[in-house]
Amino acid sequence: MQKTVYVLGAGFSMEYGAPSQSKLLEAIFELKNIKFQGGKEIVKEWVRELEDFMEDGLKVLANERKHYSLEDIYTPIDKSIIESISFRQYTPQQLFNLRDIINRLVIVALRSEIEKNPDRKKTIDKFARYVVENCKQQIEDEKLDTVSIITTNWDTILDNNIYRIINSDEIPEGHKFSGVLDYCCYISSLDENDNKIKPGMYALGKGRYNVKLLKLHGSLNWLQCPKCSRLFVKLYTNYLGGYVTPKKYCRHCEKNFGTKNDDTNKLFTNIITPTFLKNLNNVQNKLVWQNAAIELSEASKVVFIGYSLPQADFEFKQVLSRMIRSNAEIEVFLVDQDNPTNFSGDAKYNTAGYRFQNFFSGRNPRIEYGGVKQFLKELS
Image (cartoon, rainbow, N blue to C red):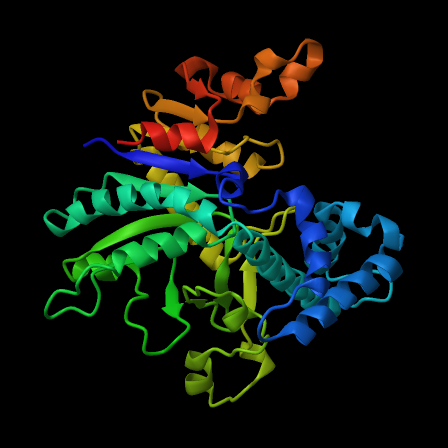
């Protein structure tokens, strides 16, 4: 059986309007000037808390804030949390809460920027439909597992597209869903009575199908319980409805431990932050990474789309080198600025194109520089 695994990076998200990581901080500070329904004062307060941390903790001048590196904000926070030490006047618990606030700001800023380009989201629809149609074959034979997606992106535009396409089909008699979006970890629906959010293995056991989307760095629509580690998921069409309001609690722990609105089971965001100190010890993230490794080991073809193979992703590079078969086809879709032939001297060795040529040199990778648009044109 032939199986294709698609690996998506930031370039894939940027095709439908998501900002680059270097522009994300600027988008966060712009939130103070954007009008949206619900939660505006909370968002403004969060921005002020971030500004205070940058001024008092990091000693960054106001006129330099938007040019500051997001990695240089997250890294001292993560390092202090990991080592249980204070950072200037911030305790480890205050830093944990601050990181959660920054994560929520990232969620709102990404959504805000993507909504400025509503037509560009349609470009991803063809890919989502292609993947769903392939996965539907499992209804006839559950062994027809021919496609899956691994992504390093946080945003949920692709998630929402896949979810919408799955649920546009009529639900068969005797079932509560047509198929499911499968994050390949242990999930619960944030809404207790939502029957369309189910684990993939449950769907297959019911004679339906799953569409595997493995998000290595977490997701904007994931909330996690610090007590039982359950991951709660909701596919929002509007992020502001679910994640601007900060306090949501694990209903399972409230029932099992007889607590109500207790901070020990208050849900927090699950995003692996952009630092060299990526903490992959979270049990849910470990499941995603383990399953991503399995998917790669089963692939006869691996297609990289908008992923630049950055040096900072050394954990994922280790998985790629360890788990991809020696005879697997490698295809890569980058943009023209990633082409090493456009540069001379040492500059060409810093391009994404050269990194792929070098990393997969023994596998004769096919590398194209037409970006996501070329990939979608070739998709059959």
